[in-house]
Amino acid sequence: MPPADAAGAPPLCHCAEAATLHKRRWWCARVQGGCDYEVWAGPMDAGGGGGGGSGSSSALTTTDGGGVRAAPPWPSPQPLCDCARPAVWMCRRWFCARVDHGRCDFEWLAPPARPPPTLLPRAELELQIARDTAALLTAAALGPLTACCFVGNSAFGLGLWARTALTAGQALGAYAGPRLPLGMDKRGHCVLQIPGTEVVIDGASENSPFELPRCCATYANHSARPNARLELWPVLRPASCEARQHMVLVASEPIAAGSEIRIDYDSGSKSRSHGTKAFKAKGGASTYWGGSQQGQPRESHAWRTAHCHPPPPVADAERLVNGLARLQRAAAASGSDPEAACGGLVHLLPDEMVQPLPWDGARGGDARLRLLVPLLSKKLVGLREQKHSSNWALVATHLPGRTGRECRERWAERLAAGAVGAEQPSRGVADAASSSSSSAAT
View 1 (tube, rainbow, N blue to C red):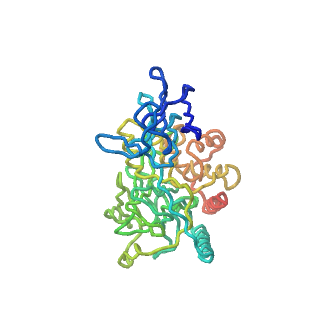
View 2: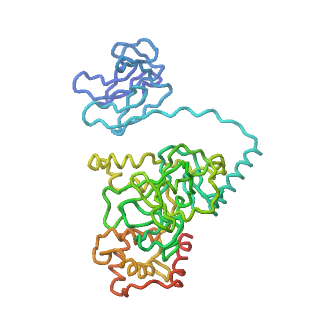
View 3: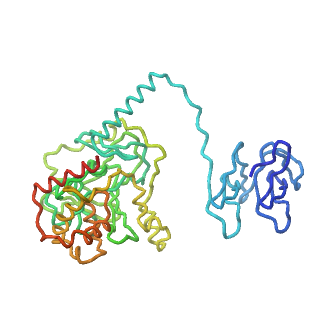
């Protein structure tokens, strides 16, 4: 509601009657049975201690527990709370004006004013645009690109770099890839075992029958002094045929834009003879295969000072900070956070925009299911018999953009009747189907 107009007429309250001015605020004029109308008067409106009378034009101050709080900075538009009512200014913030049980949780503080713009030479602007364009094209050619990370050249081949300034506890993306039973792991440098399970994530598709595009998190290199970590995020209320947990890459400390992101491969001890390393992930212990470390030079921490020009940032990118703590609070409060309990936090992670794999065609989802279901049935008990088995979530990781429920329904309705015996797919068929990932993404 606006304050008094230029002619001095008071605004109308919710009762459609002229409001009265009292202590620099407009109120409903009714003493009994009135509405809860309350609007701050402008700095030029008369204040005072009387109802509607004129008085001093000094700035209003309110007290809260003995402390003095100044009036909102003028000019300051009065926002509407979640109840669609004008908010009130208290303790240097805007709050809901209602005092009954229907009060909402609205709380807002206007952002500080932006500094005045600086005039830059045209040549400097053109140079900055050229650098940003080159960085964007290079990052898109080397690997996946998200709102907070990109792939670039590092001291050990390709590495993961920060696209924008990152805060401690900020989620950078899921460590995704085709999932396999532990017994099917034979080799690989990016194979991560999910804590408490017999399932591994084959980040580089080195053990999978089909090659899938790699996610950003799989490009993170090793350091004994990392600035990021892997966390196990459980899904508190998983849907039918969907995953029960996710591995998420999280920043352990503030990371500047253009700095490399690294995790610790060797924080545990050797667990298998062929070079397996036990990796300590927050929320549980997992296993990371980094390959043999023999013959590698002693680690240098010079990577912390290295800089790679980042692509231009994404406008209005939402940050997800302290997601694991939020999940733990939701679990302790019996699922009071529906978004966290239903796995909605995972959907807030930076998206790499994977297009769903088509079902039809020699390289489509149907061809993959005909090979995967018989193959994985040897290791996954109840994959075919149980309609709501979470093992279908494992199958879905081999079909980009598809869910476990979609795969189960597709198999039950169209493919189960003509399924053949469990056969290991030939290398030629697997190679032909593996190229469908890149063609579908294109």
